[in-house]
Figure (cartoon, rainbow, N blue to C red):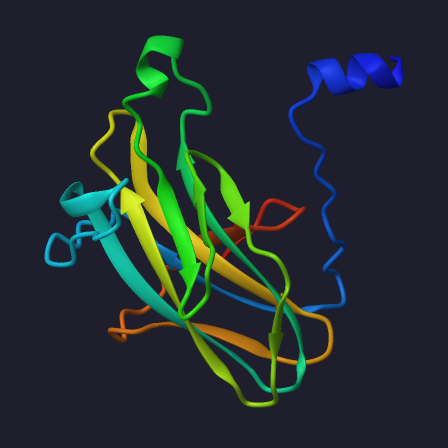
Length: 170
């Protein structure tokens, strides 16, 4: 493929970090039916659900934060304009990161030792074909990071299937 064809055909190039030796944590919510927490951003509004999570780093480091949702990856062109978007926002920042499906990673965020930063998420569950399941992950190279829900909601757990086929809770 020529570089001209690559630019013509490609929408984006993504490179994943190898987090094998990194410190990470996540918060997972399955079947989000939190009706008492409506969204407030203009593109999402009352049909959306708002959550706040806190991420803490035990050392000064860059932390990579990503929001995830699971849904059908494409819609007919005539429906795309009707789709609202999910959002993740670092409190007191100037940028709200939005996405329709899959995942949205924020730019690296600098944490001081022991610092906790709040993140606001709004999820649009009003669309058909959208699973009301979501998660937030945080990764740092130098030390522990933790992700907790502001309301003390416990993170869901999924069974982990090992390479030999045995199942255990993650």
